[in-house]
Length: 107
Image (cartoon, rainbow, N blue to C red; front, side, top):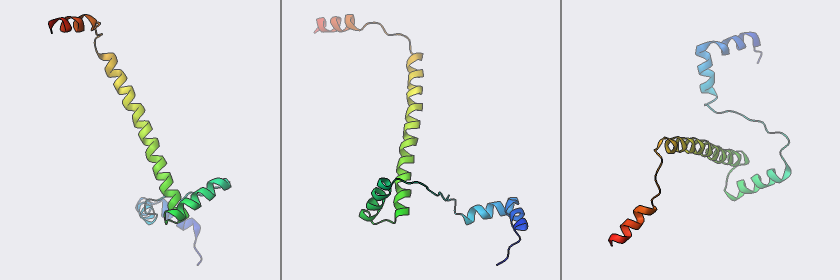
């Protein structure tokens, strides 16, 4: 089928058609991997077979897990920074040793 690419390119850049194009892609992205080490390929292929998935599904599953872990680490750093700010905002605490000794003497 012959397509006038200039018209097609203009149509895809039109706002209404851009939304339709995105829906056509179903919100998913395509990635092409090059130079995948043989060991990585064999490991992913074995895992896919063991878990009853296609190689593509296994790679997506692995990437989703890694992305979730990266997000957890990013949030963890943010929480740590927030806790550090909170801790630094607290007034300094006195040594609790005298209070502990006093409490022990009461009993």
